Length: 290
Image 1: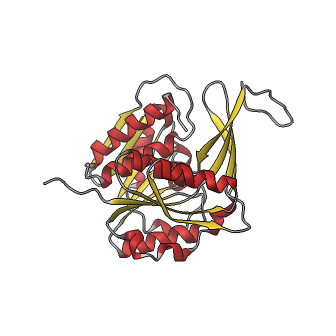
Image 2: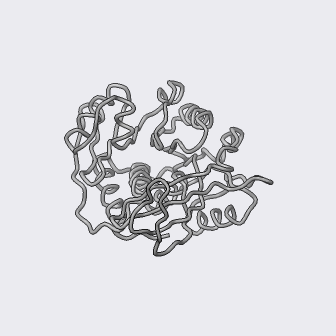
Image 3: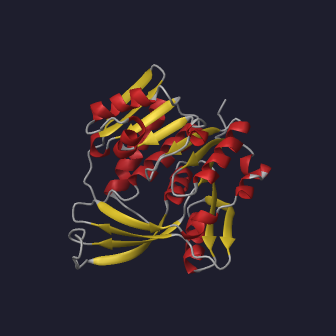
């Protein structure tokens, strides 16, 4: 019998990204002449919801935007990509979240975010039974208030919905949140913040995943161009990164997480979903689309 995929709820940020391409990122006090700029849909939450929908799984976004042109753009792009916006609030007299990202010639980037309406996500937006109906997974990140993440994780646990936390951007997190996490996804910086172990290779990513698995039921540690490692109990794997021609790393982690959880919600076992997410991220970094 074919399993009906569970819906994935993403509680998180939406940003109107202004993306700038330049030969290098400016040093303090330096002005750099870029080659072009363009607007992009963004925010870790939004990017991950879009990646879930790309796996053919129902994605439901919980967030907030301002009553401005940026907010209209973000809502339109979510709908265009197949993400439900029924639980995205439009806040009057509030500006939408936005960011400026500067990509250098190597494809790496740096960004500044301004959270705006993302800080106004209300706990009452999590109360709807319709939001949780048929859901199997909840995805969280650290671009919204921790109180919202805790409230969402508690609501998920009460309904038997698995909680996936992408602990990015890195910040100290309290036990009220961490004790509710079923799947932890971290990069090298975030893994070191949680367990004190430096991650500089696929082997050290696997070692960090093993240490963190003493605290979390399932752990994924990404190591950039070296690959990704996971551990869940006695099950573990380390996958090298796919070989691609790099265009930009912007949004790669979000693509990986959305694909991973989307495939898990569709019924894939963890090793299969991990491999699929690894390939999805490789496609993303070699061919970036809006």
